[in-house]
Length: 139
Image 1 (cartoon, rainbow, N blue to C red):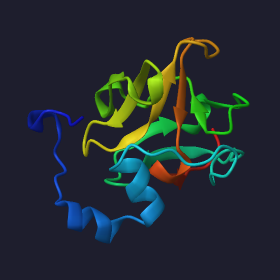
Image 2 (image 1 turned 45 degrees about the vertical axis):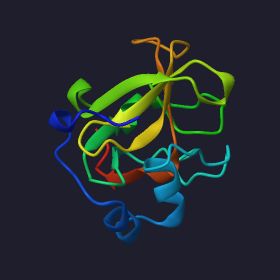
Image 3 (image 1 turned 60 degrees about the vertical axis):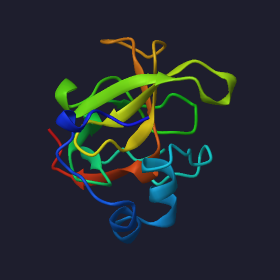
């Protein structure tokens, strides 16, 4: 489950990823893991800003598009830019889901579901540890 090389611009060896990520970030971003629900730093965070990839810093989601889905993971209605987020089919754990990945580094972020609020109707359900929050002033 890797993205084609021509879509990624951040490449590191497995050892380099282990050096720059915490063990939890490595398990999620590089091994498609999932943090336990309601444990992530950004589940209840409502600070204005942008959520970037913890692996490479690519801007992924804006706080204006974050909502409380009640699932235990930060949820967003859309990415900052469609070009920053990729998706692919995930049939692990006996389920058929759409995995969400960072297009710059190929890191696993979470999954997307068609049961979110407007304006898109999508719910990007994202692991907190795959994100880093960059605070901005309120609009």
